[in-house]
Image (cartoon, rainbow, N blue to C red; front, side, top):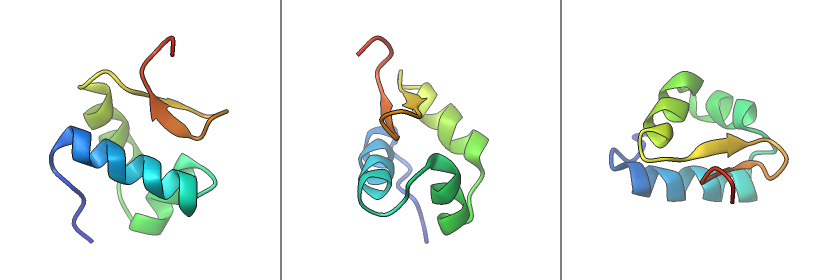
Length: 62
């Protein structure tokens, strides 16, 4: 599967998958066979971090 290249579209896709299908980021990267660091870096480049308690990418301090 080709993931969205645009970081905001990627954010939407990843958070939807985390909410609906994947109980953790580790499960997401295994499911889609992608590099965890690549996702974290790409979403980090637009200001988002992964919150393990919420199981989604969020803006820091939100």
